[in-house]
Length: 296
Image (cartoon, rainbow, N blue to C red; front, side, top):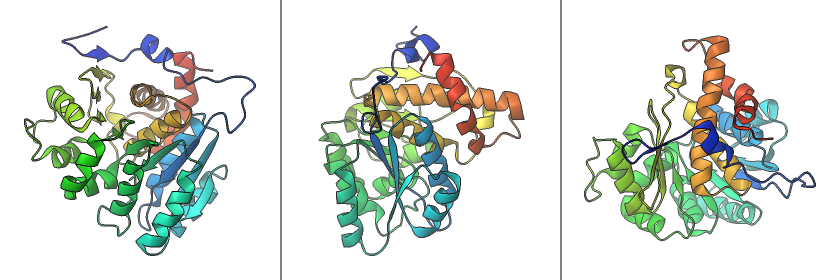
């Protein structure tokens, strides 16, 4: 259904966005998600994104991060593959290039500080390659600091990137972009930014908006203040990357991830309460959200 030229996300709409899941498939059939996330003092962001990507149904999840984060992933998600992100940008980029050869989607940003030595070179590499891409958190802030370089590259991508800003990150990205008031994180502003950057913009808020490069808008009308906690966005980004790896389009992955994330949040709040629920609880309820959408 539509409301003022906005399509509201519903169970029926998301049902048709499920990536194909043939019974004869194997791990290669269902894609590989490469997650570049985490840092010494924020390993949890990568753990949350990795868990959501694993639960999404993709065949393999590879985490490219520093040692402390990899140690945390080893404990929490032993199913994930690991590669050490260490050293100067030249070596980090060389390894990333090799990992890209076997990646169907990439997530960059959760838990990486915007001033990390490697984040801008990695972001540059991932944007230039024809791979499905989710840009979140620290990578968004890094892009905002270097927008004269990064934003034009986004506009020329053959596959639209998925950007997942909260209002503050949206303001930093949108500042200076013609026709957009950065302190107005509205549906109209999200639409304009998506069209200008030729990217999918997932503007996270109490009612998250998904704006597409062709001007279409989707909105999730399920409000849940239990999701208003650091880490919820990392789960959303990991889920989107996992769906992309399985063959979902950027539009499908963004819309489905937002709806599934919100439904998992409702289930978590029903069990733990909105005040007490944690972003780490969401992974437990992703299967329930899939079932509600009729995904096998």
